[in-house]
Image (cartoon, rainbow, N blue to C red; front, side, top):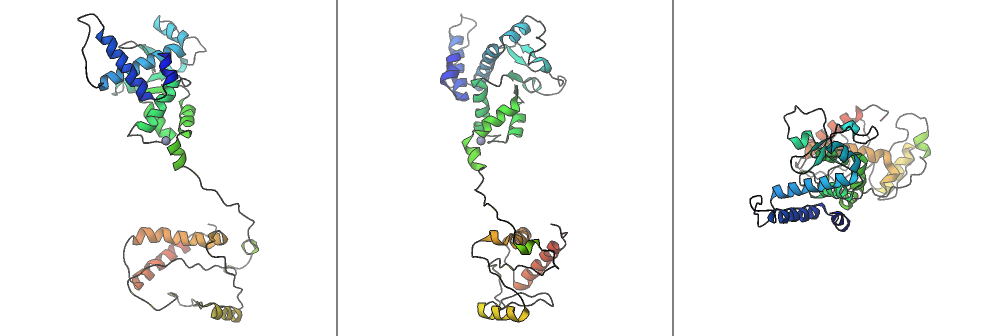
Length: 305
Ligand SMILES: [Zn+2]
């Protein structure tokens, strides 16, 4: 059996090989005790194979504890199994199970008394990998959720760290969780650090295009009285800025990291816009109304955000 753990790292294969061996043993039993089974392996046979493997692994991992439990002696006071009130289940294969405090619960035995498994055995690692990758109800679940599902049948000693370690090695999870390279941020510009009146330094961002139903020739939506339309062509804008005593800076194209403050404003606007409009095709008045309402929401935020 030990050779199986050294040559095979897939739990399902271990399980199927063991189930086939058990079927063979069953076939060579004396007449009257044998059950003839042919064809594909049954679910029951696979479950028995898992029990047989778990039994073998625990006998190998905790020989002294196993002996004490099998002869009805107390465990050694330094045994790792002491806190779990472990007992031996001898109904089919001899496996150590957690005693626990939920004996009275209306749950299946395997859930009330999960099988104890050592954390540093190839079988335990293969089992965790298989649960993580193959079980359709887990689908590469994160460690905490995975552990609670696993504990319905198996109690892996020091389980949290083993599960984390194995999930960290999962290629699919690693790819899905990959973090993009981050830009190294420079110091903030002077305008962001000066204590000045509100809107002395301000930014304008054109986030769009936004498609609306009704065509409009207006280039700037000034739905509020007092808003100043900024000329859109460069020459007129420079002229207008000079007359209004405004210093105008443009950031390089496709460089949103230059204008983090107003890019965040665009994101906040789009957050509401996407949720409210969805795929609706609105006209100018409806669009302006929605934008004004979003503006009111954003302006109601406290100034320290
Ligand atoms: Zn995964």
